[in-house]
Image (cartoon, rainbow, N blue to C red; front, side):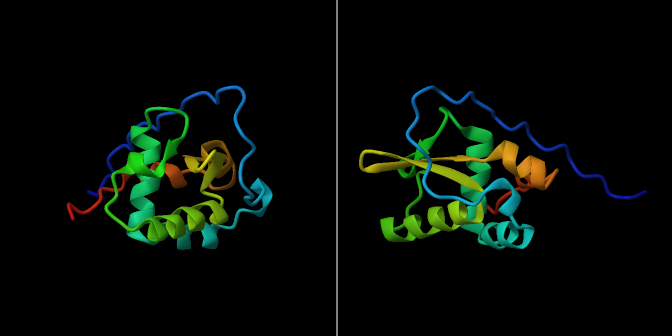
Length: 126
């Protein structure tokens, strides 16, 4: 009997609130490239960030501190920038703080099933 894959947990979608700041520069939907997205997601920390945003979000977007990552700020800035430049997350500037959310509709339109794979992934306990 062939192995079966467990169903992916449900992605938590929240409506976009009115009056958001403009997003930081990001690729257009038609410019999203699978190899670029997969390259960004190949780094385990970035994969964890995206998975947490998809499954555990508490508001529309989240600041870096919400993730509870014990990494230097410069390292986190690099990882969030890589995710944004790959087109995986959208970031907005709120004063001195950047907040992020996953571009669910855009990624589903370009790469159906990709986010289900991300949510079905089980991270190491490390």
